[in-house]
Image (cartoon, rainbow over all chains, first blue to last red; front, top):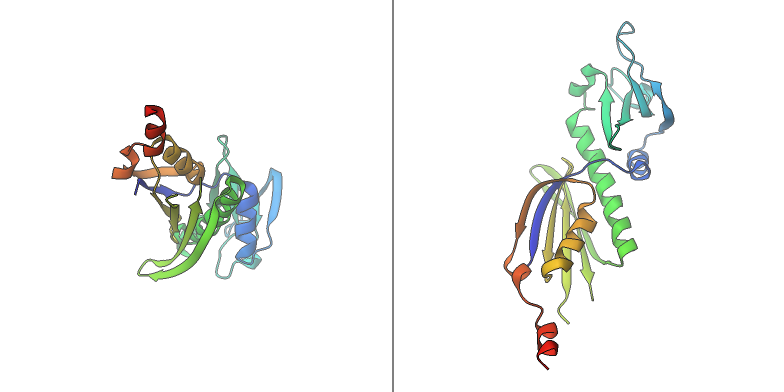
Length: 138
Length: 63
């Protein structure tokens, strides 16, 4: 054994984020210059996002959900404040991050020559965990 | 040659656990960084093997 670490996924790479959202079944709009999100209350100041999922695809949502590219390159979730409690808040984002991280990890492994030995999905009290094991021979 | 393994566990909260076995020193850091990417580091712990010397290299250098 040599090293152990725990990390929190940061959404940096647009292609993996788009893949994750598509895998979740959404049709995603990409707006390099940003586009307004629709909110539940029309009098609310419109928020702007670079990646948008429209409310029609989000059962129970009050408004559109989007991701904004920050100056440091990260994508952060932006949504109607009401949706933090309607199923499109932290928990939903965690699922996006999980799919994103798996795709990113597999791509890194392939690029660096690490061989995938196995993939398991494990049920835990906190939801599903994806376990990827790679081997290196060098 | 001893097999080096990397186990990555990703949960539904967007957290990942990276567990490296059989690595030592700089090589370990490189692999860790490859898989960490730009993610936020919450916990980092070196294990005993990290500090082990690369025996083959040492034997060669003694000749």
